[in-house]
Length: 181
Image (cartoon, rainbow, N blue to C red; front, side):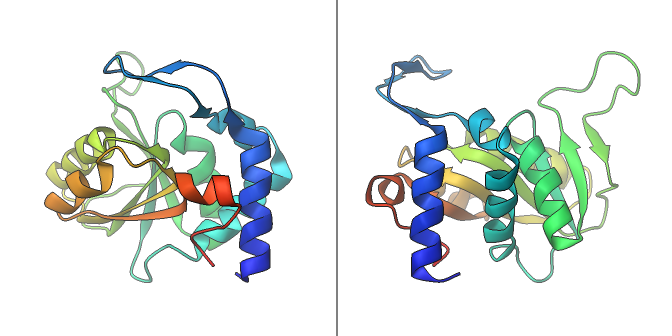
């Protein structure tokens, strides 16, 4: 991806998905702006272009892309289409009816799985999913996201041998530069 293309994509993402308004995180912390991944996912051309850019970040030995509910699901579907890799869908908790599964879609046991999510803040959600996949027999060493916010996620993931590959950082959105350039 060229610098011009990355800058243009970052500007399009910022315009579509960055909202200046109070946003309360699970831990009670209040942010003055947030990234609305649903606005990105609702724009088919932008979602396609983000998936194409994220495809460049997928490790060569990846076998399955695993999207975390709910924000990672549209991303993993688009990224699967862009790369030709199989997709799995991860629930925070096992489904209480029907299949009663926590992992849906492609099987993961013994396959090299890469996690996919929209935003990484503290990294707790990705770490929990990496642990669950590892218990299920899937080696997980990498995670992709559209946006990395500087709230400790990278450090936490590194401590547990998960490399984070963000398409953009929060600084990229304010300057219009993409991390994939």
